Length: 93
Image 1: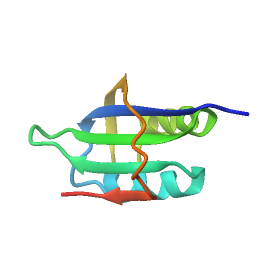
Image 2: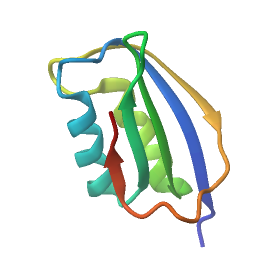
Image 3: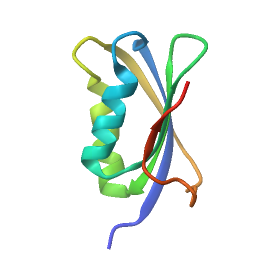
Image 4: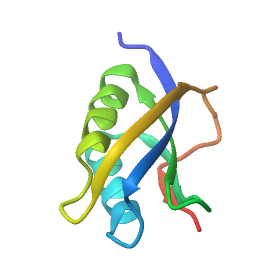
């Protein structure tokens, strides 16, 4: 059985004003991962994603491409603690 993991991500590039947060939620729902996404103050998008490791890794690969109108320069990923209270994937801010 696959382990449950969690990652925090900061996505930079042209990622605000291009539907990135809604695209990120749709991708999360398709892959069955939980978490949240929000715009950062410096023009980046910040995310928390958790779920089965296989699904989380697939999600991280999608982040590198982003939605059609985005231009992703970088996805900085760090390990995070699994948050038991997360249920589904939410858009914040």
